[in-house]
Image 1 (cartoon, rainbow, N blue to C red):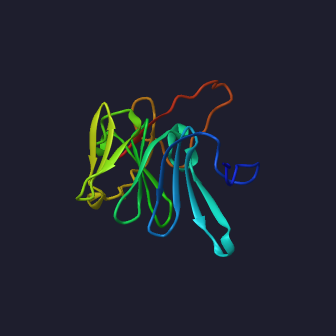
Image 2: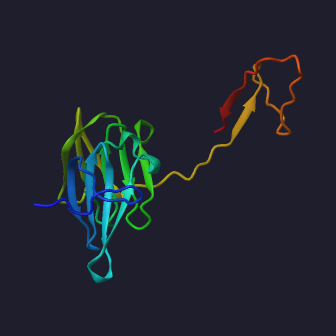
Length: 178
């Protein structure tokens, strides 16, 4: 028994944390999810070496809490978390967190509570059952502008704000324009 590819300072490896899923994809990569340590993708390299890549808090996996991981037919990973469902693009490893606004409303999800239907739909269990239809996923491309407003709701000039020497505080509101 061994712990392969341990994490070391300056090197991504496999942590000694609670493993929730281990899945091999069509490319031969091994996906390992951890509760409290995120997701690792282990990619075989020439000569028997491996490359370990981490998907964690900085990539959108809040609290690094990966409860279960499934792969869809296109090789994308879907991870149930305490904050929603995270989709990880199988090519770029870019993560997209889906939450209540995206139809994910049964939080939190439970560790290792996941499965796949014969049609390829993904099932995640928590306080109920969430069914994900991966073929219908469309990432949001909407980028709402943010506008600074004064206390009375009027827009603040993009030229900036000038404060006099006697002003000791500043209160600014902002609005996301949709």
